[in-house]
Length: 108
Image (cartoon, rainbow, N blue to C red; front, side, top):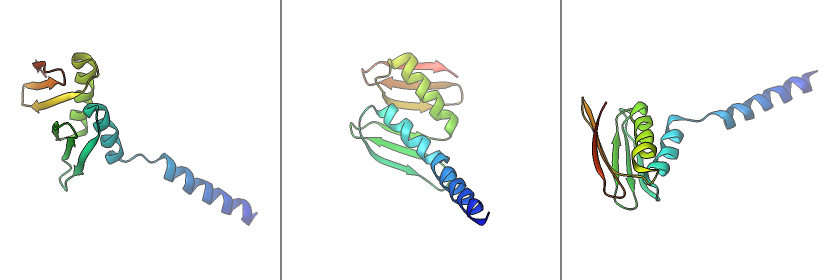
């Protein structure tokens, strides 16, 4: 009986370790999707801001995970998945450029 309990604890620990996907993991995965190239720098500051520098020189500073979701949607809808070159968020607008050079500004 003790043996079954021991295996249950080990199995639960392994399952929890494999299933936990941290916020940093999510940002890293998205950074590859947004850069569409290698990522040279990926950092998370103490205040939760994420900075991404792509190998082609594209740079992103994200304030929240919600901003990342918006960036991913913009990449798919406006840039055909080719990646973003620049991205800026103001109170009313998202201004961005696609890797193709197209510069757009859309309402939030």
